Amino acid sequence: MKFVSTRDGIEPASLDVALAAGLAPDGGLYVPEAVPASELKHAGATLAESATTLLAPYFAESRLREALPAICEEAFDFPAPLRPLASDNAWLLELFHGPTAAFKDYAARFLAGSLARLRDPASPPITILVATSGDTGAAVGAAFHRRPGFKVVILYPHGRVSPRQAHGLECFGDNVRAFRVDGSFDDCQRMVKQALGDESLRARVPLSSANSISLGRLLPQMAYYAHNALAFHAERGEKLNFIVPTGNLGNALACWLARRMGLPVGDIVLGSNANDVLPRYFAGGEYTPRPSIATLANAMDVGAPSNFERLRWWHRDDAELRAAMRAFSVDDPTIRETINEAPQRHGVVACPHTAVGLRVLEQLRDAGDTKPWAVVATAHPAKFDSIVEPLVGHPVQPPPALAAWLARPASAEPLAADYEALRVKLLAS
Image (tube, rainbow, N blue to C red; front, side, top):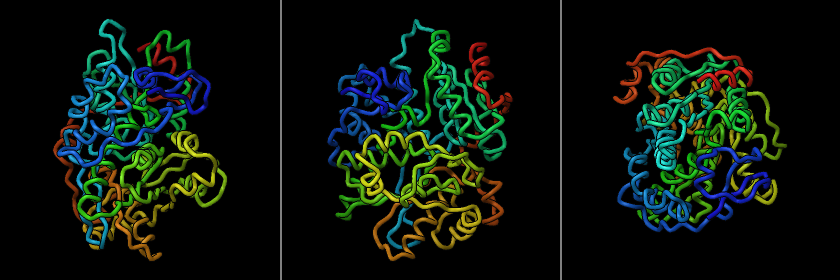
């Protein structure tokens, strides 16, 4: 299988080239030439086994083909359980049981395992450059921490992540550096894309990306949707529908791609915060990126979702794309209200992002929808203790792995929201 750019400005590339590059040379995002039909017909005994079977067609011509089962075992060695909610015919897909308590742990570990096997041990270290709106950076930092042959540079918007998220970005040391950028996530993302597209820089500093623009992040995220949708269908004989809180659209796109491969995924609904570029578009407006604004659900503070380019490439026109999914926005007062009510109404303590999904579920129920829905829980509420605890009235204990990271010392370097400033840092590293 070959992979092409969403901008159609390059020759088809192998999966190995696409994984190593991150961004296509023409500035586009890599996508498979064709989406294969799924070879996964029944949920595997483990999530790793489901992932291996699901991803096999993409790796058929890769040097990683024989290593794929081992990569999946490393990346998917913690569960993605589907837990019933107190509300009728609804579940929570818990994706926060990894080392940094966020869904991005799965794909970050998958990408790290893949790149480690592709890298020539005799070559210079590769710098993994990542922009984060809260959780990506910690997951990538943990996945590549102390891995020989890799450095990690994390850019995050100063003052726009929770205190525990910031600590989780800054606590690694060793081969991982964190920069607090005087700007927004969109500034961080812009700077990363500029660096990846700077040929003169890449000639001196080998670079790759671990943002959701990377195929190594997108493809493995299909696994937990496929695994749970198949198990649900086998047990109940119907498709499971998903509500996905989303910012940069990578996790939601993975859900859509699993459905495109033929998995029994039903409707897909996106939950956005006050950064409502996607809800406006899916309601019939123009797709108009705009500067992001800070919200309680900070990991979704994205004004120009990168993966929209992939989503648009896969659809003939706006009408077909708008028929593929729906999107709703939830403002901060409603997020607070939902967090406060979630223990009684749904039987869970929710992070601000999961609260967006729960509120969307409530909106669907109020409109008369009775279908089975899974709300995707993207992060553990303990990462947002300063927001959640005052609303639920009790402490939220961090899981052991997260507590271990929080116990480490942390530091970050300041950085202007200016590409030349980043370029200087990369050249000096």
